Amino acid sequence: MLKSAGARGIILQEEWTEDGTTSTCHVTFAWPVGEEFDCIQQVRLVVKPLPAEPGRGAAWKVSPEQRDRQAWRALSWYLKTMLEAATFGLLKFEDIFLSYFVGKDGHTIGETIIPLLEKGQLQIPKVAS
Image (tube, rainbow, N blue to C red; front, side, top):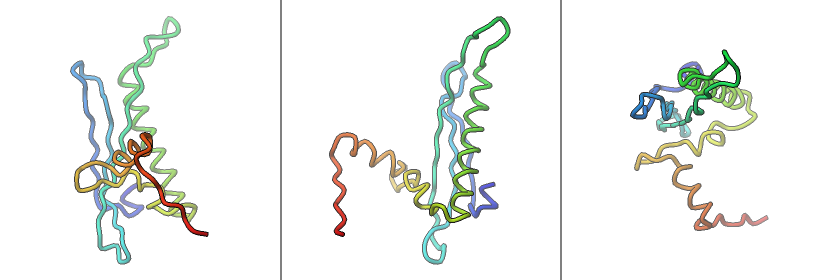
């Protein structure tokens, strides 16, 4: 899906806890940006699987493996939806994924900016009308 949309490469990654359950799922892909698409920007999305549920009935439960699959499906559905929105011009790619662009320090723009916004340490200038 990402390749057909124009991505130049992809990395799928999982991180596990000591007990072997998945703590996070990562999708990182290289995306061409710029006037001539001459610059490659790394984009990283991360999702944490929900905790397993012991059960609400004799035979029903959600296992850690099911939660892992749910997390990967959520990433897939999100990417599919957002890439289609960009393809049809509803939103620009940069508008959708800007928060997930990875900077030179290895952190995403969202990881850097959102805590500053929450603390009131970042002022966004008013646009003159």
